[in-house]
Length: 633
Image (tube, rainbow, N blue to C red; front, side, top):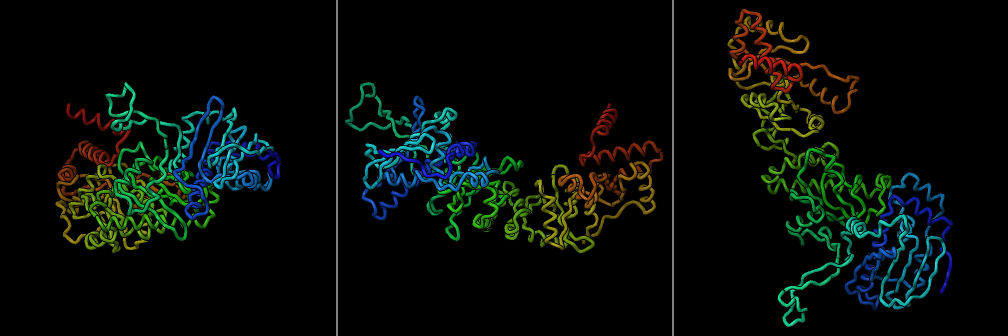
């Protein structure tokens, strides 16, 4: 038996570990199982190159709870250690002093980045244990060793009678960490951090029905049954998850099954997946899934899981995955990203930036391929993926460069165009006085239905752009397409389009139109409505409201970007009241001598126009309803 002192440069190393890693104390299980996995994989390598006589076999890692004695066991059948190796790897901690330790991590106490930076993975056990035992036997056949430490720099190291290769770690759980003696808590951690570890992990046993073999001896009570129950090892992880395989090894159903494994509570299949696999200039594998998107972008986030060599790290992949792809689901695994990810590391690491760029390019290439190979299917999925793509165009220049070849602009009649196709289609019919191609769009088919119908009657194409970020996207598209302008269909700009066909002829003379305009202007509120007369089809609405495109945009930007834009908190409500001079109502108003009746007609028509734009609210709406009920009683 030998005794000694662990070689550390400060006496209070264990209190520091306990204190500064406490918020991440659950990490201890991930670290110890990662060590066990490393030991097993190292043995696998040695057997493959013939550097050990030990048989690899079918090793597992086992986790056991002894609640009565407050012990937690982690056992592996890996490489094992000699007493000399325990002295070397366990008793000497690469630690540069408490001052450096505290300075380096003063702003990241909640971050798991402390573990591993100084080879402290094994010592994370002391976050939850008052005493730790390590019993280990090397693959080379040397006698086993038994190491014990009570959380101080003092340890004992003595021989042990263990005969099987591998390492057993026994944690004597501290009174302030008794949660880690609960089966549900350990299972939760194993499923969170170790669900896809490459070595099978046993946690308890389960009963399984097996078919009885002919002639096999069975208990009397089982004679009439074909099956009997036996206890088998409960392996809780999947050592060979889909992302560790090549795309040629997987079918569509394999990808869907893995999606269910990742998200058991997700009932809808993903729309499609993107398999990532690169080994230069960095290593990265993974599978990303496009789910059906909801309009709530925040709820969608933090669904991509980051792994390092099949060890779970985090679901906060900001900085690694481009922001717009944070709306997707799936897995990314890279040994080039350490287990101890911190934001400051991600911001400065060159590899991480390369990974982000690669993922952006890979996603764009996949979308292009899907569009090219089966455009009809891509169009059918457009509404479920458009928010991600539009977000990507706004936030990622490299994605924006590629997006033009597959991003779609559907019309209200369900025809789908790329931007270039759309410009080519409308170049002769939708042009303004400045020679710009005008793309008419609606942000809400229901609210703007009457305006859509008028535009369609004139032969115009109306594009449906209804995502919450459409106003920002339009600005970017206009900036990069100098000869194109986007105009909402209820804007006054639609009246400025140059039409190749003959305009409608007004049935009112110029004098009659001037009289009509003057009469209406004396009735509608001054300063809020600009009365404009237009000859339209007689079946078109008699009164319509449009809004100056520039003012509408400024108002939307002010609301979305904060009230202080350009020093203006609230833009004034200004509308164009467009009167159809070919409507029967216009003629009636013109020919009515009774000013009260004329005023009643104008106000009623204005309220109806406001109602169609969802602008009739509050007292005005109440009065309108009351007035109309009175008319039908």
